[in-house]
Each structure stands twice: as structure tokens, then as C-alpha cells.
Image 1 (tube, rainbow, N blue to C red):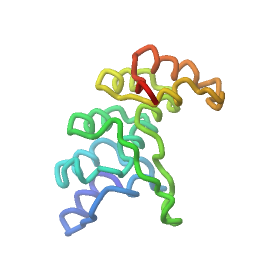
Image 2: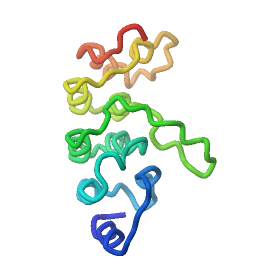
Image 3: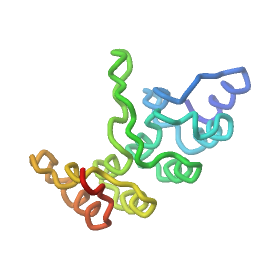
Image 4: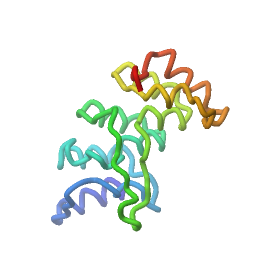
Length: 152
């Protein structure tokens, strides 16, 4: 749903208790203009546990990432498992920083690390060698930046 449709939806009484499940749609990524409207209308709490931050990373939408983080989004949020309802796709099972690794975005990795994002030590160290080689350099960057939870 783009900015114009979002504005129309709100003006005509559109409401939902959260943004969960609204951003993984066949029409494509809505973009920063849509997120600005939703953020202004509903506040950052509306985005909790929605995976919006992770999906912005996945879609390489740095403008929306910054907007959500500056508004107070939890950069270390673990989105609850969406598979409790079989109709709901599991859109954002990773933390935003890990999504940045899989999106191969050095800029976003650095951005999150500078703001205190952390990944569990076992995720970064990958003791079972499950991380595909193409992502290793990005996970190494996470370690170099110190974005690792100690004791995990």
C-alpha cells in the first residue's frame, strides 16, 4: 500500500491494532513516505513486533530504517514467531542487524552497531558452520565492530 492509498485508508477510518503482517505484500515495498504517514498517525508502538524494521533492512530501505530507529524502534527486537497462525508468513524472524548481514549491507551493519545493536555470540561465531560463505565477511564485520552479546 503506497502513501496515497495509506492516507486514503486513514482518512476513511482505517485502523488496525498493529502493523504486523502489513508490509509483506505482492504490491511491493511501500517505502519511506508510507512509513512516515503510519508513524505520524499511530506512533512507534504500533510497529512493535511487526518486523517492519527488519523488512526495511531486507528491502534496502535505509531511509525507513533510520526513520524507525530515530522514532525509538528496538534495534535488538526479536519478533515473535509468526507461525502460530498458519495463514501468516514468517516475514522477519531475524534481528535487524542479522538481516543487514543477509542483505549484505555494510552501511546498515555499521549503523546498527553504532547504535548498540548486538547479535548472540553463537550467531556471530557460527560454531556449526551454517552461515553461507558469501555472508562470512559481513558477520566478521559485526564482530570487528563489537556488536556481539557476551556470554551468549
